[in-house]
Length: 235
Image (cartoon, rainbow, N blue to C red):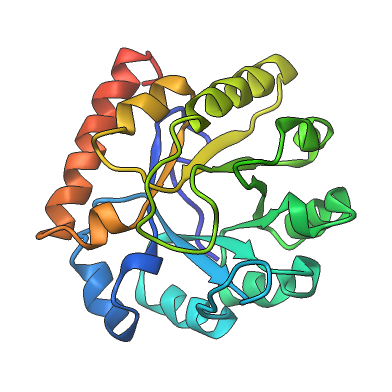
């Protein structure tokens, strides 16, 4: 398992989502990024919690062998506890599951941490922050979906900016060290909006992998993020 070198620092992390990459040629798709990112985001979909089926732990294992970057695995699956060990063994650095899919989230978070991974919970747009308020001591990351999960290429839901802002305040008031990740419809056009609202991990798929030059687009993301981090005095 690889660790993200900058996880404990204040800088905003860029996590391109391979959901929008060419899954039949992942090696070249990732190479095209030219290392201009912090972690690779892997959207695992089961066709039950969300409509699509994407890939499983075997692809994550192969991906782990082909990249030196850490893997950020987002489990959009029913019964995530049955899959956690498979993905940890495959090389996931962080494992995030949906609050909507778990009756005993603290138990799942504890298991993820026991396997040596960063542990996270994701909330769909309509799920209130109250659902994770008492989980913050057990979490390393909160992922806010800024589109309804299940498909790439969707438009950012503008009302999620207020949710990001509220989540940032909740985390800061708690005193716990929890990363705040956003995922869905993020491009350079709204990057400043979500980072100023409080996000410190950004997932972007279509805006990067479908760009004419994914490596240059990822680099532009990183430069914009560095400027915003300096503005917010994070670095």
